[in-house]
Amino acid sequence: MTIEIPNAVLQAIQDHAREAYPEECCGFLIGHSSAPRRVMESRRARNVATENRPRRYTVDPLELLRVDDDVRKKNLDLIGIYHSHPDHPAAPSEYDRSRAASWLSYVIASVVEGHPKDVTAWQFDEATGSFRPEEIVRG
Image (cartoon, rainbow, N blue to C red):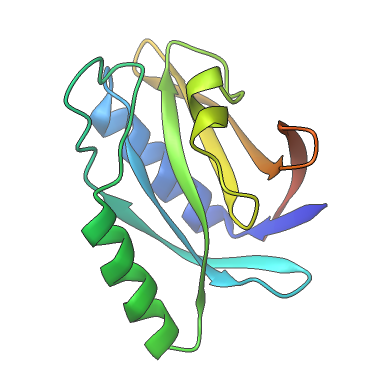
């Protein structure tokens, strides 16, 4: 499974992760869900987690609905969520797994001591209850 993400979008995600450090950032991935899955833009979201923000993010459900409605009007799809892992690998945590949906891609940016490091993409497999890596094709 692959996901196409332009370099400018990857840079925007890393910039957001750097600015939010040492807390997790989060945002939306907008594009086309048909194969090949292609991200056209990212949009920042507010992390509304009330505790342990260096290890947790929560997207405001109303913000999620507004973005989904907005992108549909533009004939685009909400195809994923991105978030950062401050001082932690760019791999899904158990917390991430417990909140995942199979129809979304999850992009994780690790930030080590305030500097972006790795960016990975994942898709949740409901049958196995685990994440599968997605290859990021840079554009």
